[in-house]
Image (cartoon, rainbow, N blue to C red; front, side, top):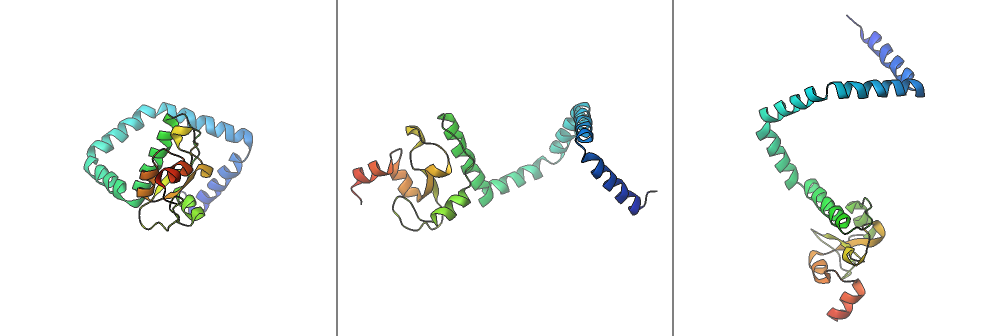
Length: 162
């Protein structure tokens, strides 16, 4: 039986061994070969586990989708998908960074946003805008819905609001 000291020595030796680029390449190729060799077996195990725990998995998925993190992830996926479908440049945009940058102020009506908010594209995707930090801002749902696919200047002119 191996002692904790022996296990620690082995871990350290393997760590030092993998620091060499040649040894790292050997390790990675052996891991890849092992992955390919046991791929079908692992897939069968995953399927078996899913069938045995289907109700629990679906309950956890539903709980996540209804959580703030799940809703945020869905919004982010929707924005990225829409931008890609329109052939726009797509950057990973973190809504929390945009919120902090804009200090929670709606860029359309310039009032504080309380509660739910949307990520608005300043130059709409349909007009060739990009999905990037320079082209997104915080907005109220109503403000963004009223603006539709217009530039901010066009919206303000047509609404005679400001």
